[in-house]
Amino acid sequence: MRTTLAFAALWHVLWSALLLPYGVVIALVLGGQASAQDLVEGLALRFGLVVACVAGGSLLNVGLAGLLNGLLGEASLTVQGLVSALIFGVVWFFAVQDLLPYVGLGSGATIDPAAPWAAIAGAVYGLVLANGFSEPGSARPPAAA
Image 1 (cartoon, one colour):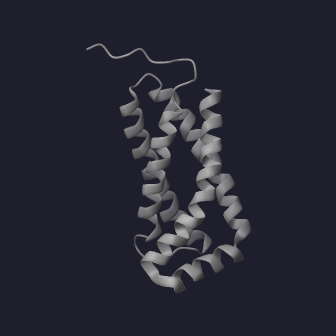
Image 2 (cartoon, helix red, strand yellow):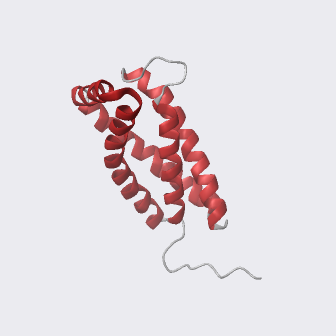
Image 3 (tube, one colour):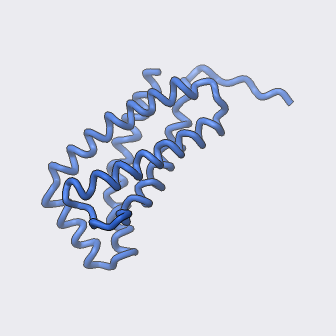
């Protein structure tokens, strides 16, 4: 279990570092240069808020990874990956949908344009994290034919 939680924490730190460029590229593609520039300026003005969100998100991600590890520990890798991707995708969607307007970074639309992209990023996080659910040295026996 400790290895899974360490993997979840390290993956959260790496994913957080990758999400900032990911967000800027999505803003650039969808909204043009002015939108990407606004995002970068907003993040620069609220840098402490970004750090707080990353720290708070690590508690949620590592806690959810521990819970999923306990619930899905004996399931096949396919089931672990699908369930983990679905749960993290939904959690990240609602976290961004509900959190961004609260901290002043959201668009105020019914569905924030960043929320579906967060769901995709959360699903990828869940898929990668599912690979960390199996402890080293505890190789699964091959399935019977």
